[in-house]
Length: 146
Image: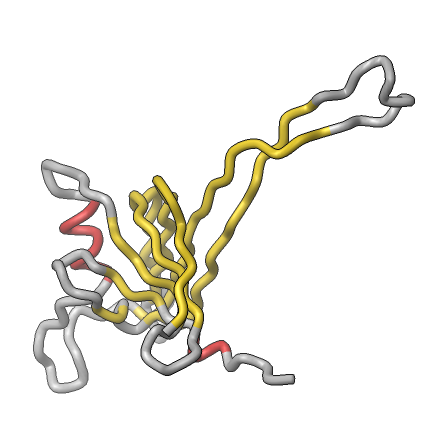
């Protein structure tokens, strides 16, 4: 059995029209949920019964906060770029994302679109500044394989 190395799970953003790895991301979580609808009735024997209903997904990413790379040049795939383009602009646009590592043969990945719903940027004394970002999915989440 092969266990996947968590480093291979990456988040790519299509915010600038290209699929860029979100800079300095350290952790990422894709949440997929399905709501249920209750159908309990007098023949249920006192137990709740449910059927399937709508599905939803969200994406959480956190990492080191930076706006330049190691050489001191501006990065174009950092949290500031996502926030500026997709949250603070006059038209709040959806983020297209890929979750997984779609670079190697037989890799599985998920693609979706969503809106940034929260961003936190923090830093402690003599500590690495960090960010946390949440995206709520809209439309279909698809699964692919390279």
